[in-house]
Amino acid sequence: MKKRLITWAVMALLSMPAFSQQSDAKRINAYSDTIAQLNQTGTWFDATPAPTGKKAKNVIIIIGDGMGTAQVYASIVAQKGNSNFLRFPFSGFSRTYSHNRYTTDSGAGGTAITCGRKTDNYHIGMLPDGTPIPSFLSLLHDMGLATGFVVTSSVLDATPASTYAHVPYRKMYDTISLQMAQCNYDVMIGGGVHNFRPENRKDGLNPIDTLLKKGYEIAYSLEDMKKSKAKKLVTFFCENYYGPIAPGRDPILAEGTKKALEIVSKNPNGFALMIEGSQIDWACHNNDADYMRAELADFETMLRIVLDFAEKDGNTLVVVTADHETGGLVLTSGDIDKGKNECKYTTDGHSGVMVPVFSFGPGAEKFSGVQNNIDLLPKVFNIMGRKTYLN
Image 1 (tube, one colour):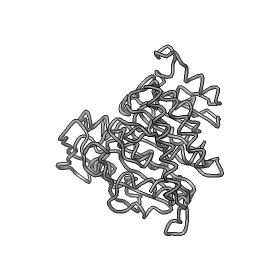
Image 2 (cartoon, helix red, strand yellow):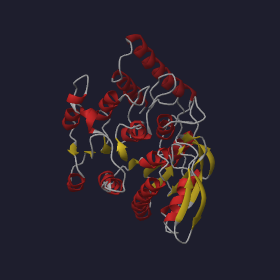
Image 3 (cartoon, one colour):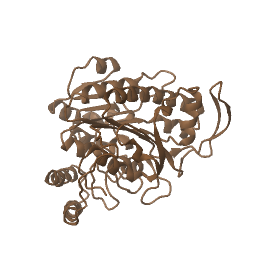
Image 4 (cartoon, helix red, strand yellow):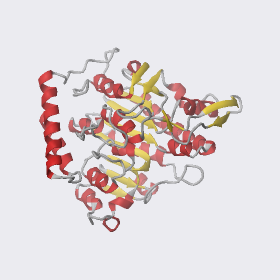
């Protein structure tokens, strides 16, 4: 595993833009030195069983982009007491600050959750000094688990990119698309096919062709995705970004989650998924309460699918959190019986407040209390009984 990790790091670096041969060499040496130091100091550890004595075979990490406590409570009220958030037996909080800012962006926030390390705003899958770091999906993929993600944004957006890419700036879409085409996850569902087409790229390369050569079926519509029997699937629902769920967007979050579970649950070794409700963030950036409510309702439908699966399966850990809060949302009044909230926003950007954490399944109790966003991943590996370099 350790040798594979070093090899993976070198390959990841070589796929990054060549700022200079000297800087690339420094990054490769720095990453190799980091792993060597971890090995020598013994910070790799054998995970201990969950307190219940039962390890989780599978893990699903769900991110509500921009979803703070106020957004969650707005959804609970809107569902008139039938919210799927109320099905989680354990909850806590996560502190979201990045390495260089009190208020994180989605690049650093997504990297903290999926890679377990703090980094600078706008970085994806790397430390502040440029050292690449693997995500939980890449680590568990190397351990033989099925892996994938489902998002309602472009597959190249900050949160999904944090699961496979390693770039200093989150909008390096041409580079990020090349790295996605090499990551070998079983299922990847989202938008953003534009940067995969050679005619839209300055380098003329064709990541679509790479995906096809690696055995992926590519679907371009909801119906094509639902009909697919492929073992390896990439779905591009749109050229760049979806519209809102209301009105008009297909139920891609719910149906994409169903398809992803269908594919990854066939692996006898287990699976790991990342699912993101991406547009909660966009709605709150727009200070649009109706848009937010619709995205949260869509998120609730996805949660029901995931929790129903986890309840039946009995071996799946589900962790729901956010990369940050957006909009500084305040619920000034409402009507619980009617499922209504009066919403006021205090910013059109992100805020620095803590965000909620909900957990279900084996070891779920470990996520109670106040924790850092980088604390989540070591707990996941511990509960799964898997080795990791995270401490």
